[in-house]
Image (cartoon, rainbow, N blue to C red):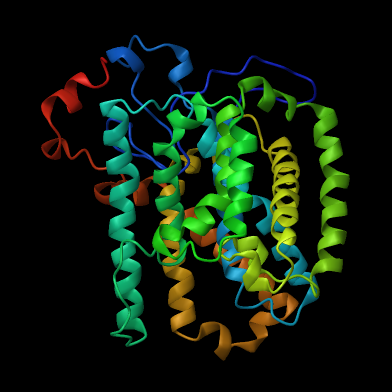
Length: 392
């Protein structure tokens, strides 16, 4: 995301462009959900575009590392039962990996104003992949598990497609958050109220959308200089005891805490605790998520690395790794091989998940999935949207 090397170097950060955390790979490089390459603004050509339109290696590195943590954590779920240390590590990662992704999404949504070209990118880069993979995941379960009762519902996100639905809603409301005076306190209030409301229902997983909302709004209000702060050497050093302390606390809490708190898809009443616990836990998880996200970002490489190019393909890694996890689940791979729950087996699971999601983010995979993750679809839009939108 940034270009500073080490220590206290403070090269000025580029202004946030409309980069997004679920990737884009179309020729126009304008759509995305987990990546950002976009056309130069104001109708300028690539030859005359200012340098600020270039992709930032720092953010691409952060997105790749975050998607690896997401895939690994999903792979740990079926094999961590019975291991306190594994559950503690799972809780630690779950505290910040999605918040980091969502915060970056918000940061690169700052320029969203609802222009026709921006709406077009939302439809092709977020809405279309959501529809396609919602159907794919539902059909996969229906036939892999011989479950004809498995519905195909675009209102009830299946497995990890919830993030695309959430990103669409968050992005659509961006102008409202930029309009009000205290966006973050309002978002935290909405998240707390959502945690106290058991009747929100499953439509578009609104419970989770609202409870994760503060991280997106925080990204909207952040500025380049805020990210510059986490690049300082002292912050990187402070991140070490921060993660060490969080790991110790997670180990203590592992047998005592319900994992449902981390998923943000249930109300306080579902846990059978006093109503005020929902407010306390919402604020506590937000604070922990922000601190650990800052610690994570502090250690993200700032220069180009071998995996920088993979940051542009995180939408493919995100959507495809779930099929691999589900295939192993439906095929009883985890239950039929008990050794996977041993320390050695968990290491194997970790390596396989990290390797698989890395391959899924590669350019060949992105090109193969371009038709559903970032299609042009000029035929589906009015001419003034496809041609005049950017000029506006």
